[in-house]
Length: 464
Image: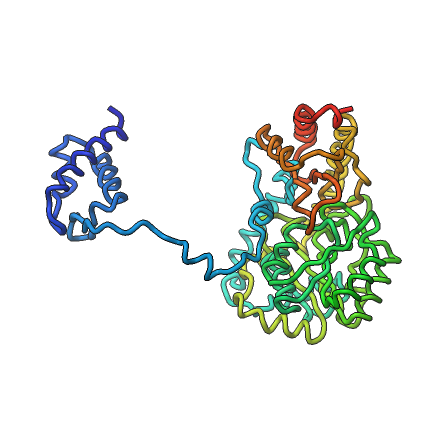
C-alpha cells in the first residue's frame, strides 16, 4: 500500500475514533500512534495533517494533539457585500487579460514582455549579486527614489532629477498619475484602440473614459479637439511612441498640435513612454515631455519591458505643482521601491551591459517582427496588418468582418496559442474585429508554428 493510501486509511480510522471523544480530549502521541498502526512517522504526520485540515483536531506545540470543537460554522453568505461595494469600477474581464501569462504549453503570440532568451539574465545575476553586497541595498531610500537613479532617469527627458518619482513599474505609475491628476468622476480622453492596462487604471481611479480614434500617425487631432471642447476633459492619455497595440508613432506635426490643444484646454497629457528602449529601425523619437516646458505632460516610463519583467521599476516625471503633488502623495501608497531593485537598475543602466543588450535586442526584435509579418501574410492573408511598426512588441491585425474574436481567441487558447482579443483594446465597441499578435516573447520557430495553428482554426476567408 502506498504512503498516501495508508495515511488516508489511518486518518479515516482516527476520524471514527474522534467521533466518540469529547472536545479537548487528548489523542495519543505520534510515536504511540506509529506503534499502534505499524506505520512510519511520515505516514502518521500525513494522517494528522488531513484531520487538522478537516478541523477535527488541534495541535499545540509542547502539549500534544487534541479533539477540536465540533461547532459548525454557518455556510458563508457574501450577498451583503455587493450592495455595500456598489458598482465595480474595473472591468474584470479586461483586468484578467492584462498581464495574462501563457503556460509552458502555450505559444505566447500575445505577451507584453520579452522572452527569457532576449533578457540579459546572466548579467543581471552578476549585477544582482554585487548589489546585494552593497550597504545601500539594505537601507531606506527617499520615497521618491535614490538620488543617483533619479538623476540618471531624468536625462532622456531633459528634466530635473527632482521632477522624477521612482515607482514599482509602469502600471503603478499610470494608476498613480491618473488618480492624482484627476478627481473621481472626471473625464479622461484616450486614443482608441489603446493599452487595456491604461483603461483599467483609469477605471480604478474612478474616471469616465472617452475614446478618440487614431491612425498610423497617432491620435486624430481634429477629433481630440472636438472631444476636449465637448467634455471639458482635463486629462489625455497617449502613447506617442510605438503605441500598444497598433505600433503607431505620433507624427511631429500632431505632437505640436496635441501640445497646443492641451495648453488651450488647461489639460494634462499622461505620456505612456513604455517602449522608449524598444525602437527597431531607429531610436524612439524624443519624449513628448521634452517639447513641453509648462508642465502639461506627465511621463511614465518602465524598465520592466526592455530589461526584465522581474525588475518592477519605472518612474513618473512631472513638473510644477502637479509633480509636487505626485511626490507628496507617494507615501499614501508605500514608502518607496525596494532599494536593492533600485541598485540593480542603476548599475544596469550605467554599465556597458546596457548598450550591448539594446543592440542585440533591436536585431532580435527585427527578425521576429519580420517573421511574424511574413507568417501572417503567408498563412492568414485575409488578416490585414495596416502597417508594420518600427518599434515595440506588437502587430495589430484586422480580421474579416463578422469574425467573432472572442470565439477565435478561445479556440486559439485551446490550440495552445495565446492571442490578444482586440475587444479588450477598445473602450467602446470595436469598429472591426482585430487581434493583437506579439513578437517579443516567441521565438521565430514558435511564431511560424503559432500562426500555422491559427490558420488551421481559421475559416477559409482568413486563409485565402
